[in-house]
Length: 255
Image (cartoon, rainbow, N blue to C red; front, side, top):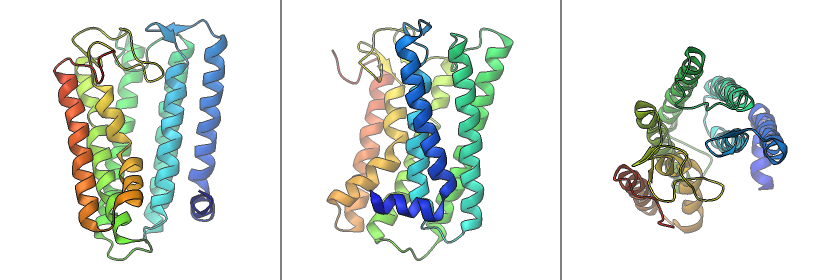
């Protein structure tokens, strides 16, 4: 962990500082949720921004480590600012809607709510397209100062993350994430995924966190590039299974 910290500190202080800011934002939102009576869909309105702050922090710190290995540091700098600008816009809008006691996603109740939702969708689309370009840079670079299995894991995990990030459009198309009922039904603790119905957020969650899980499994288990491919395919099939299960109206785990 100390080595990873030093990599980001020395090569990308912008993403290091921003990840810390996001963690502080998450702590603040979780704290407010304990005292605020404002609720959205039956839970504190501040839980969602808290989770998004944590997710942004994790994505930021992870990409900060991976970007260190790209030779084209000019593009790394541009992409780093893209992360900061897009996440700042997203988080600002999510916090603002939470303070109003309104949903930030799938909310088209008023012209303003629709504008907020569309801005967030456009912003994350731009970031994912920029991330795709970063993936292309990884695939086009021939030499890395890291073991080949780890480099391959990073490459494949970024592609899976992008793919399932765009799964968000499936939710946007139907303006909800629950299949078989309306949003707001009882969910599991913390993550709040539906206990009794399909939930598209499950595949979205596991998919976008491929950039952490696949390289970690590679570090722990893989001894060759073939092992990395097997791990990546297995993880992709698992996430795809959770998506199919959700589309069939089935919860991840029946509670």
